[in-house]
Length: 157
Image (cartoon, rainbow, N blue to C red):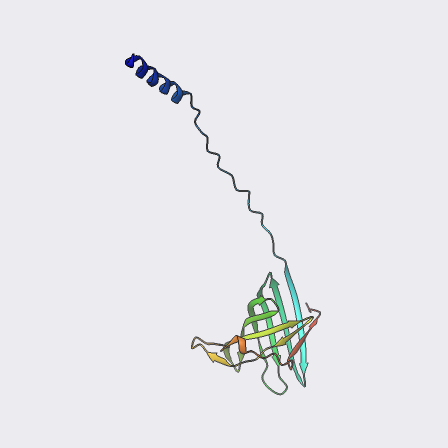
């Protein structure tokens, strides 16, 4: 009797194991990434302080200034003209300004605070990083005194 019972259990377990359906694992397929093009815009600003003229042209993609031009035309002094590359965080534009002055190429950080349709240039203590770049010592200590204000203008081709 024991043999019949054991044999029945073995047969039952074989039958049950053979009839079990194999579980098929379903792997979710990720949808194709949708490419979202960030718009590229061109913005131009200009300001006159006494007899000095400052103009800025920005090519903005998302929050990046991918290229731009900045020109300081000081009355009876050498003109500084160069390129801008940087980032816009909130209402603040922080960029590297690469320019030629007196035949020497230099790089310095510039910062502008956006207020409506204007940019106000910020100033503060700077340090030379010994790699040819002059940067702000402490960005939290920058002052936007409103003396250098650039207003939005129509961009010229």
